[in-house]
Length: 398
Image 1 (tube, helix red, strand yellow):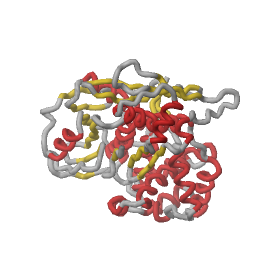
Image 2 (cartoon, rainbow, N blue to C red):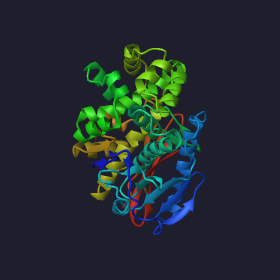
Image 3 (cartoon, rainbow, N blue to C red):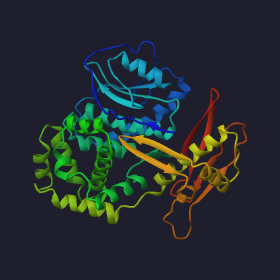
Image 4 (cartoon, rainbow, N blue to C red):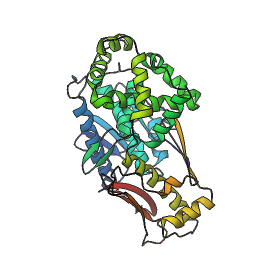
């Protein structure tokens, strides 16, 4: 059940490689899209990314655009088509589910669909899409922790009712960071502040929990600087981004933007924010739980085991020792059926009305049941679409 998302986060390519002539081309509002998929399948993905791209633009409206050339996106139906096409451009896309690449000719965003859940695909596109936006509009001077942290900040967001909801704080990431803080295992702010892109990639290539921690910590540092104390640090953070995007060193820009060269108070405030203040958001928690339940239901359906209630599903998955393992941006996460909370709705934050989790029986043979979480700021529903004989779960917000 392991699905690997992107580890290689940006690639500079000199070779022009293959052309896009073999792919269908269409324009969405923000993207020039090349695809081997039917347009009926590709256009909804492009429309989603139009909303995401507009959010990038809105958040960085005060920055002078470095480059306003057409934004190119490649959507492939299969991993093999994705790998083959990028190989023709001189890009090794092994171990990735999506990638941003830059050459003398273009700055492309690419991903493949088959075999990935919708949540995984959109997370990858939103994360890599920010790298593309930053390269084209902000330049390549952003410190690596900012580039990766903001890519995760956007990657973890979700689109509901046509609007992108930012500030998501997944329960798993918070728990991992709190444990690392208590074990004094986090990266020092000085080290994160001055880490080069080559050093970052070096740590990723080594693997291990310390490499994965970089992504969670970079995301949480950006979340802290944007949301802590009602946005107290946001203007200084924006100025820091502006100065580094223009080529100023991270240390110098930090001292000027935050009016202090001492990062220790910020590190202490960040740790307090993560351990005492930040709360997991219920929608992100619901998405994670529905992804787990959907993967478990899919496995049972393939084995010919039918379930009609959450209690039935729980019994079957626990007796079978079901586990879901995913690796995203170097961070390995494991969900186990032994965790009782995975079969419950997340806390709604509303004392008057608790959220509910329901199983929705399928009326189609061979298609797993769906799920719905009600009572949150939005209703989160997991349903299955069948195309070319393959059932694929989709999470929607109502």
